[in-house]
Length: 405
Image (tube, rainbow, N blue to C red; front, side, top):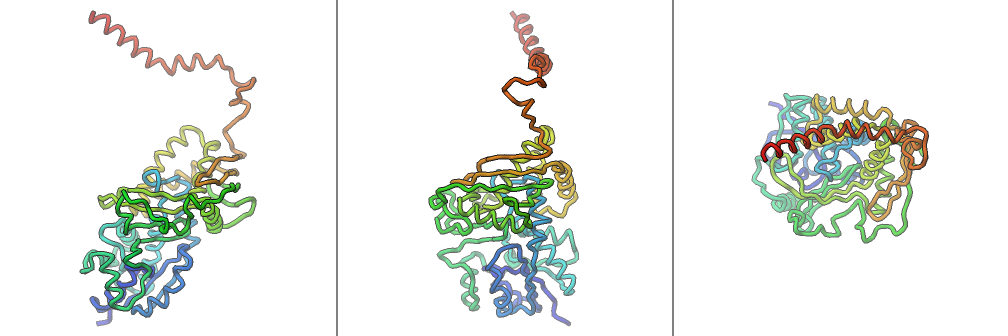
């Protein structure tokens, strides 16, 4: 019987580093490691050699950066989705693009199963597995954290040391981190205690507020149909816009969120998220929408943004509802084209100007100076009609009180 082939979602982090030898010990298999490049930078440099030394028969390092930005980050940006008011969904968005490529490679290689290193307590196991089920339900799924004898990150570190596998964490710095072009997340270690302030050495993409620049920077972002197309007048790809804004956000300590969130699997967990460029883009788009969206569309979009955030967080990217909501946001933001100027200073993005050829803000109507467009006497009739239900109710209550006397 030929050995079964297992495609492993490989990052080179603690969990996936020890999974290769564990699979070889426990399965008669060939392990094909797949690393998706979604903008994690230098982290991928040692991945190929490390995976091969650990026992992988083949290693794929897939450039998914542009697909990630175009087909996952930008639709989520347009939706305005933020999970529980703080989390900009960096890890949540990355999982479906990586899982999609895992399925494609598994099909190309004739693999029997896909393996991931997500814990049984986390959200990522759901995100990976829902994508696999949506794209190829015939593939088996192996989740070592749900079946092996390793019970903690400390156990995992001990196993790595026993096997002579270098890992990017230590018992003194045991944080679980996930990085891509949109963000960097930190969990575990002392962060598990909400009473404990996050240590200063946690942040890696964004400097601490005490070290933020002491002079402001201005940045102009141009959007077309709700998507950023240029920075300070220069046309750039979406990836490079985020890349440059990450540097500016770092300089001004923008985009750090410390949150205790509600995980999909039923527990609360604490995470520290760094999203410098994403925070700037989200704020800029909201400012532009304030002049391009009518009231009803804006308010309805706010409701749909909450639902979209839940879908992305819960791993339901490849669902008819998520696709339908994306179609709504595409339509709603057809005229969200224009330029936003922001002042970046001391962890904040301050509005410093906004303009659009589709602006619904009319100075001639909104002015406090004299105008020939708005007849202020019309307001009286409007208020009488708008307040009629309140007036009728008050009259009925008054009459009822008189009858009781």
